[in-house]
Length: 339
View 1 (tube, rainbow, N blue to C red):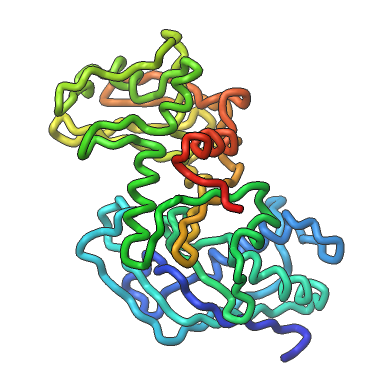
View 2: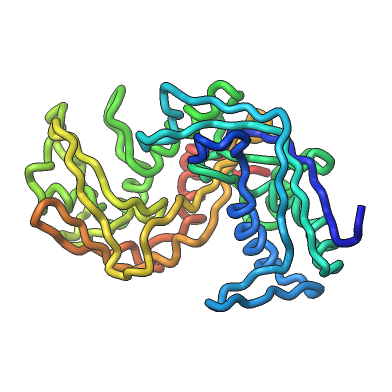
């Protein structure tokens, strides 16, 4: 192997959801892998390598990526995966991959050889990657203990208590995430854990204000009386669900499907994936907490339905911390702290 080249053979652990349904062999893309790996390397602040700056001030490392596939399989799904809600054409693919890095910076090659397997351990790819899809491992260095591996980059790792397998992991993650952020209306009404966390401090969520401002959307199929916080402060509404991922709209069934559009009054903020990364390893679902949600602290959002609209802010810095929220769930035995 040349000093300027580095090659890894990857084992695909979960299918990847991608958009390239008309391209045979479409799987992990270099255009997604390189920016994510660059950010990972930059965060390391390794003394032997320094990123370059692009024309727009963006930082990157000088290397090329080549990905080749073997034993490529693709599945068009008639029933959409539990964790994918879009209704356009998507596919699940799996393959054996070879990733080759090419750079004349030999120090960079040396660092990449050590760090790329670690990067793969804590990173997923493709659509719905935060929910566990698109997980790959380096065949030679697959860690025997994911927790000790991940703790090098995350101060605390969490896990679900339910044992999973390749047939049920999607449903387990999907059901849990729904309870985490949205609550459940099927098989008994259950408020979201996120709602409960804010409610204990008297903070109301955006869904209640939506129904207050747009009363035609305040429909309950089961005629349930709305559940409020124990000590509500009338105007203390927050866009709390933004902390676990920012969407462009919410749907309401009245029974027709109605959409409330969501735009941030800061035009640089469009959408944001969930900061919780699910990793399906062995028979366990692990949860990794990222901090990019913090960019939304105190930001103002416009909710619009028809010709009516209102503004609401996201939680402030002193009102939400993801690790404190996860510890709250662990104290209630909803999740566990991985040891």
